[in-house]
Amino acid sequence: MFGILSRSLPLPPSSRNVDPQKIREDELVTLKDKYHELEHRQQKLVRRIERNKKFEKYIQQVVDILPEGYLELSENMLKGVIRRYKTLEQANNSLLQDLVQKDDSIDKAQQTLAELTKTKTDEVLSYNSTIASLHSQLEKCYQKTVKSEEAAQRRKVHYRDQCQLYGQLELAIKNIVEMRCRTGKIKDDSLLQRL
Image (cartoon, rainbow, N blue to C red; front, side, top):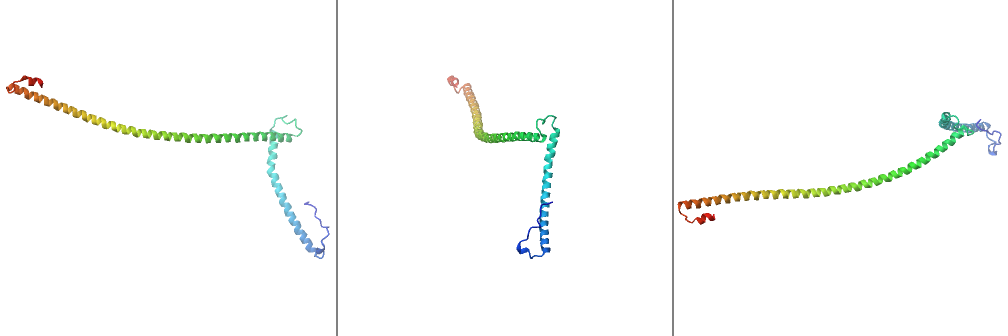
């Protein structure tokens, strides 16, 4: 069952004097080792068959689903399905290559977008800095304007006060001159007219 074991081979000259019981025990150990090795190999093959059975089931399901006449041109339906699988595999590989190319182009586009975003962000920061500088200058100008307006307002108030004081002085002088003219202390009307 596990192969041909040779018991009829002549023993080497050094082992002719060995006890036949010892020889049988050695053969038994060798056979057990071979048996265990073959048993292990059989288990591996059974596991492999079990693993690959899903593919056989899948192909059979595909064949069962196919409409009638789909693979009639081929002499064997299974070969037709395998050819169809190879065609689909080639199409899949082609699609994968397209996907890789598209991924590369997307990566390049994302890199370009990142660079553009960085450039535009730098520009915005520069503009913000310029705006902040201009805002600072505007604030200084506004403060100068407020100070100038306050000074102008003070000058205006001072001028008004001066004009009022001048007017009051002028009226007071005219009143004094007029009173003097009435009392007769000043007889010259020309002075009154000059005022």
